[in-house]
Length: 152
Picture 1 (tube, rainbow, N blue to C red):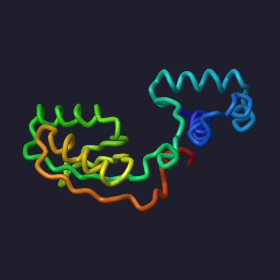
Picture 2 (cartoon, helix red, strand yellow):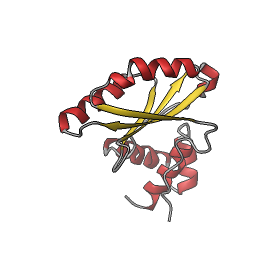
Picture 3 (cartoon, one colour):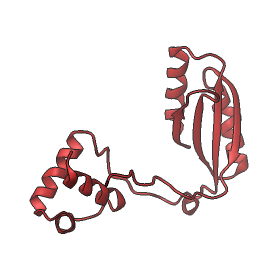
């Protein structure tokens, strides 16, 4: 990956709708070169997709929760089953396995506190290996999916 690829990535991650002509203008190359490089970065798995960011509150999800999950055991089967279970819950918008305690950090969208409580009591706590769930409410999101620093 050279400086032009990094510039293309930097521009594209800040504006997924940027045109090839705009990329060309900013990189000093042609539109066709930018398109070819962009597709190559996709094929190499550097670019994992293009997404539309939706405001959760505007679509009825007024409550965002960070849940910390601690497992009662960490064998491969239990971890895999928990990961699979989390991936199947549509309210889970991010889940990460952590070193240390707790074992998982999970970002959850809910319509309100009662909605989250139902999810926690009826689904999260029933996932394999869950020993403890602690939750905290998000007051305000400061940075959401911030860009990866690519330029030197």
